[in-house]
Length: 491
Image (cartoon, rainbow, N blue to C red; front, side, top):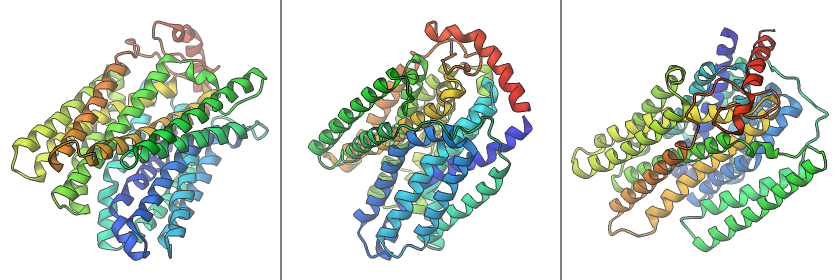
């Protein structure tokens, strides 16, 4: 168990640097566009393409872990990401920046993130130890996303934006060194078939949907057209999956992934959590910089309140999992998040204290997000056995990325829609919309099983979380599988 705990360090650091990459460039846009003699729109294009590449390749990345092995794919992803970071650091123009940030870092992220969650699931087979593992990983995800603007702003102001990419490359080197002692609990299957057609269909469908979401604040008709086209392509994808399974072949995703009611609900809560987190980050950052005139460092410092809240509750995940059911933690997290949003709006509306008035609300929101990120991941990953870990990890991460994109798009659309009389009210309305999304997450969480899950997944890939329905039929298989997993990992 001690060796498994040490293995958490590179996995958590990997999640941190990928989350950091997704948020830190927002404070460098002006510096990069000036230095590379390009436009702000050009740099924003690089950020958008990064999101698209991740969305398109996260599911195939999860599937490739079975073919090439989890450790090998994790290290390959690190190398690709590191090369991309160095390319950005020396980029002479926008083209190399897009290659390094959007393509190489995007591909690297899609390759290394699924193994992070698969290895954590395989290393830790009981509920509480797995909650501790996911708690650390989730904490680093939240810290990377929330502290990205601060760290990026500090490095950019003190040295240059190029140094921020050198920082990423150095962290990657540290992770590569630490990951050499990782072991893969399952053998690679190089002869395993890979569904190329399914990969293309899923990638195109997700790219269209994410592109449509990102266009929400610009052209509504184009947004609807692209989302509709993406849904059509994904319909063809699922039709291909059914046809492939009916023919006795292995598709990119097994339809069994959608057979667990608990896992489906868990993924919806994941989507809404990241929607609220990234939406709040966007609204508050824009408010502080556009309305209040704060710079990147000042804005990042204010977000430290949310970072502390996320980090504190995420690191308590193991203790909380011992005392409370996963459903209770998710419900409480959404409720606390709603309270945080309301506190943020009320204090800002009635206070004349300036930026410090934002701190209590942001801290409460961070506490709420931190409470529910870990149990949601735990519920989804624990619903399936070893055979489906690669697929569910990729699908789960893709759903979370869609939530992040949707949060920024929804918040941005509300702000620029001109619904209210003043800009301040537009930001307040955007936060109210995010609060409504959190309330929706609370209602979804209430449909999760009341009973505390008794452990990990069954070996055959079926769900083991007791919810009073079909998922409750594998309890005995679960207990046998946990004993076998423990012996195999000890060996």
